[in-house]
Length: 426
Ligand code: MTE
Ligand code: CO
Image (tube, rainbow, N blue to C red; front, side, top):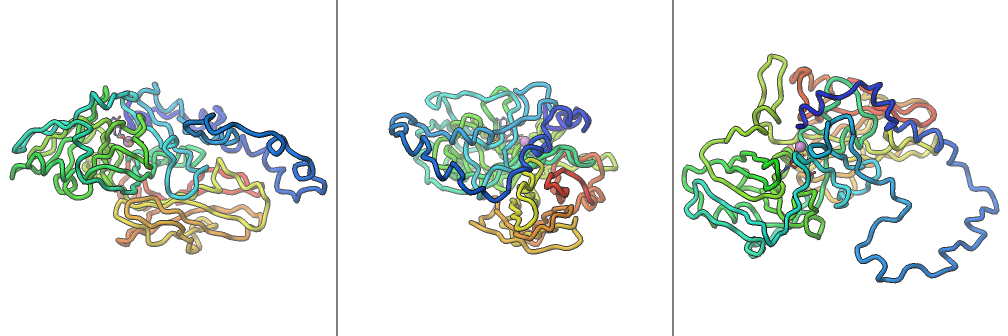
């Protein structure tokens, strides 16, 4: 099942509430904390086991895993979204992450026919079509080209797609978690194209995956020769099978569907191929019944990751930290504003950490919460001056039929108890 159909078969909000995925469920128990520690706290006065006995030796964990106390930090899917997990999505737990880099094991996954398990010794990349020399590369061949390291976000075009007509999923993991940001290592697609020699008429490249869905997308030559990469590593280690091991295409700033995983073939042609994924899918149906297509770039967007429905405020009123992410397919983020009154007043947030083009940016806003109900929003502005729109501004241009490319401003309602819910103010 594809993203479009997935969203169309979405159950009612009430059905979703019943499944207990709501942040509110976790809320009740956690509101009691936040008191000053009582005198004689045994955690301080008594020697703890980890202080008394030696722990595991260096050979106990040859590939390190997170602490057992972090076992809740996992990708999650929404079972009613798709009929099968083979063609489905599980979402990045954005509300639990810090900084701008997504750990490899937590990058959201979107497969159209499950995870291909490929032995790199048996993997080839072929290039054919309008080229002087059709070529076939082994992994070893690819690793002899000049190598580059680049940090990019990958956002599925369907991210936030379930929120077009109103607020639906209660948690930024579900509303915005079809995004990840890692450092890719690989070779520029340009070098591979140049090796084969693109003929004068060659103006498009078809990328094809080796998985059972044989995902195929047409990419304009200009982009292919600009910043696209064939990546074999993420965050310093080999790609994970979920992310396309042994190689995937990297198409910076453009919709995730074009980042073909398990890449096995590139064909050069003189026009787009009009594949399923660029005609019936990944197009935007407008109010007049016409569909926009080839809407590749992911527009400027942001979301507050904490507080959010899965991360209520548990400390009561007083000093409160707002943390969030912003990104744009057009380059870097110039500014992020935060509102606590549903967009009436805006305050400049602080962008912290690296500000790299087409990568996630981390922002913070600190304020003194008076304990009253608030409506939290963030609004990003990118280096080319694009301002993240409200949902109403988006719908005025795009109508109500769209699913893909929803970059509207998200609102979280924080109630007096610190509980947070997904609502819409437009
Ligand atoms: N490539 C192949 N071969 N098969 C797929 O199913 N899914 C696409 C894209 N590339 C897909 C693919 C979609 S829709 C997205 S959003 C991204 O891969 C997801 O990448 P990820 O699983 O690394 O998050
Ligand atoms: Co996608």
